Image (cartoon, rainbow, N blue to C red; front, side):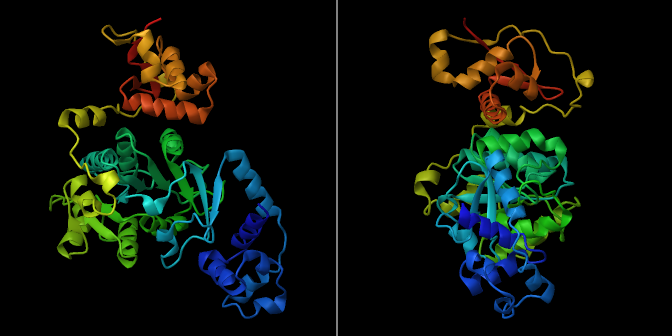
Length: 407
């Protein structure tokens, strides 16, 4: 813990940035040695004068605050010198010096991770394609890596969760700051079923200037990058360029030539910077030999199963209770789960949620209040129940049991 404080002191120096922090560590070997340096020790650093001046500020107040926030939020920290730091990421041109991780722990160097990226203002067809591919990748054993903002990224994340696989979202702000606010439930789902990762400490807003550097981490953690829809310039193309520089595979979905969203992905294909793919199998076939245990049984998801999962979402509605549709009465013909089968099929948290939502549709907050299950566990259980078709989501983000428990 003491060593972490020196890393946090270093990364919070004004104007330093990842490149500057790496230069300091390269010179001093450890951030602790850098902390105890004097003015003359900093003169040899290839940094602007005002940045060298910031190293003379030895206050640990900000580092202590960040550590306290991480403890309170259950956020883990990983530094570029840690043994568990992904080798994939360490090898890129500008690896993040500190990573903040909320959720599950992944050994990225052992994961067939595929990044799915695309436009925020995408077509409805693009959303559907991204969700389908995210689901196919997860079902077939890949770890889906994406952002979690609007458009393609958000859809790919939803698809991966519906596929029952973990998903990692790399953020341009703190792992405790949902962005956009409308995606806060999806944000919590990812934290429960996968991981949220950022190089920015808790509480950091998602600034526009943070998205470009964020993209190098997306591609750096992954074996390949799939572009679903994009313009010839923009964030998606930046991620693709990072991927090419990092030696990652690049894939693109073809789109009709008359569509505006086709210009970037089609150009990638025509310039032979990306390989045309139509399914997750086209991508994962490249990595079967590297990850035989995870990917050897590549097979398309049955059409009926895929359609059922993809159609699970209902149109977005206001979260305000007065605008939410009234809860439906218990529907006849719900599957009855015998008492002796309930423990085999559901966890204790899932059973408590099913019991709570048997008579009326509840919001996630109401479920937490009624069951007294911690929010993260409740959201994780809700996600798994939806994937099993045991809970349905109704307008207003309200959840209702789709099965009946025998008393």
